[in-house]
Image (cartoon, rainbow, N blue to C red; front, side, top):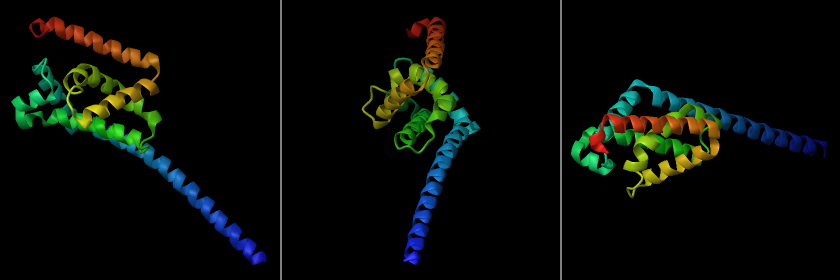
Length: 172
């Protein structure tokens, strides 16, 4: 009988130890993914793509992603590359694969800039899943970022929009 009790305690200990190890590993993987995605987003390839995409989209005020793609062809891949990054970020959040408390600080300010300056007018009206995912990411940021920080990001974008309209009045 004591052997059976010992075996049950051993089995229970193994299960608890395994579950604890699994849980700790999941948390570590979530933190790792956040920093891996930030590293990817900050590397030179992605920085160049963001810069290229931003300039291209600003070159065509009033045109959506499809219209810019039709004119620019393969050169427009950079704007889709950035949008797909944000789609992956949303899916990592949605499926609990990333440590969410790190996301606003690592990605929020630049995301708001892209959302307010480009996506809101040029992508979200198109019938694509990627646009729905980006809308969902914006809603998530709205819920998980302190109001004061969001206000700072939004105010900065509104100021930029005003400045762009003053510099390029023919595109209003």
